[in-house]
Length: 124
Image (cartoon, rainbow, N blue to C red):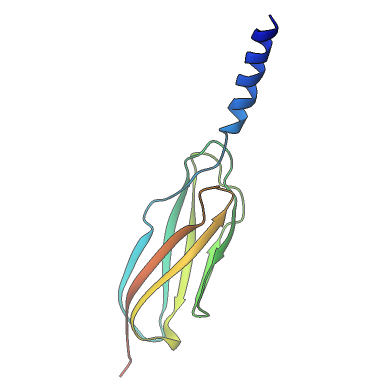
């Protein structure tokens, strides 16, 4: 009987160990094509929570002052989606661009990379 309760307790606590959020990027690489210098390019990345606990996106790390990120800080419930919008200001850049941002969350497998690229044409 003691073994039965111990086994039951082990199964109970094990079920909590597997409850976790899981971030999935539906298309982690985007190409914005060709734009004229000075345009602000909007790039939307769709994020899904395919786990069984709420997903918390804590930050979107950028490496260039030409880029900003907009995202909802509310938890993404299991089975639901959200959008991370990248705003890429081409005022100070030109030629081929290949940029990466990192999505930080409570998914233990992160951070996740989002990549966008394209060509910025000099205005004439």
